Image 1 (cartoon, rainbow, N blue to C red):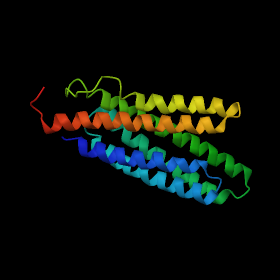
Image 2: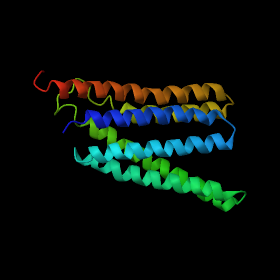
Image 3: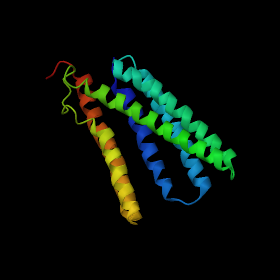
Image 4: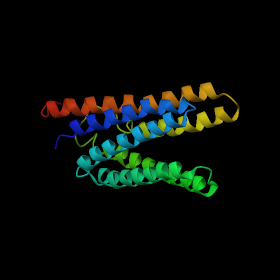
Length: 190
């Protein structure tokens, strides 16, 4: 099966989600809520792409249910946000739901990128093995560095680090997609 069209959908949804994350710079609750809803829609599109890729390998098959769990938990957290209105217990529950949704999203990304990595050698993609895994590593490292910068009262460099950490997976996935497209367009050339 050709996977390039599904990777393209996944990349576009990831790019829109990364651009929407810039709304975190806003102090307006309505802007943040709109950004979260757009991100949730992007996660749904990513889930569709993962569903289409799920028959390609066991790891890619595990990415889809983890993404669905992520969507459900984050959607429930958004509902709790609207209902919380000063209720500390509901706000804490919303925080736990968001954190659990983030963990499910990380698990989905782990399965996705490791599943894509295991295809490199058997399908002879012109892409270095294990490089695609940096799509998971870079945002995690960026989050740790940004957290440290925020702790020492440097919010602007923290935002810059987060922005770079979100661009790296887009670039790496784009390069992977190009390698897949070249192999699928010319399957007999080596």
